[in-house]
Length: 284
Ligand code: B12
Image (cartoon, rainbow, N blue to C red):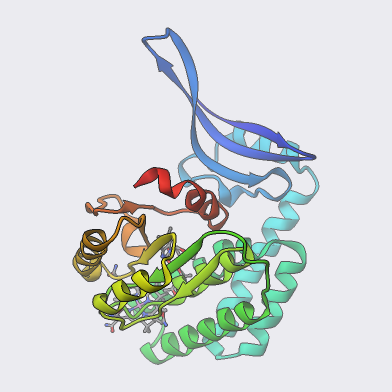
């Protein structure tokens, strides 16, 4: 059975989607977390995995945490997605910034990236794939999205008192908006981030690791064809140092996850990543 469990931390409540599993040895049932849903007051229907999204019991529990607001917030999220899609494809950076600012007045920056920018980019990708959007428009939209993330990054500040993180992609991978979003969010969360960008040969990366001694390496892979290059990169890093390596990105969010010498992190909310990083030395 699947249900929602709330956990209270200080004055806030946090929701988890859990299921009961029978422990035949102990002859008792225990709870297994399916997904962390977020702060109770901010959870919306879309946070629930699609297969449980229309479960009446789950929806009524969600609504009970947020009776008046839930519909309003869902509508605001949908509206922001729709507007951002339009501004990005129109090449309108000022309009995109305005949507970002309005959204983060009500919601968090991590929600902007998880619930607005990422789904909008996915829609742009599928509209391009099905021919609804021209290659040129997709490029315009990607460039505006890139600039938007850069502007957000330039506005953030924080006390850097946590681990040093190296963000990189395998050679041949040209997608870097994911890394830029991670850089922005982890910087806000107090990590010192080195975002290497694209086209950096593995020898240069290894030299950099040796010099700067980051605590963790995060490798982002978007294109399936780059998985092999990613596996080679992890292997090379692992041959040279004991540093924990986490691998993630769009190419690793499907069902058949290839094997890596590092830890693969599947589709994850941004606000889960700092927790993973805190525990990452235990993983490797
Ligand atoms: C923008 C874009 C481009 C831009 C890239 C611009 C840039 N500077 O990055 C351009 C136009 C250059 C481009 C080129 C290509 N693209 Co493209 N692109 C996209 C698009 C529309 C959006 C990607 C994006 O920015 N997403 C938003 C970011 C924020 O999300 P994200 O990357 O997933 O990152 C988040 C998480 O995954 C996670 N994460 C990421 N990395 C990691 C790592 C770790 C360790 C962890 C824990 C988490 C994590 O955190 C991030 C923040 O939340 C996608 C569509 C899609 N569905 O994603 C297609 C898409 C990825 N592209 C695709 C293709 C085919 C191409 C091209 C081959 C097209 C061509 N024929 O030339 C080239 C290949 C270039 C190359 N060699 O890499 C396909 C890939 C298919 C596949 N699975 O292999 C997609 C899926 C489009 C589609 N529907 O077919 N693309």
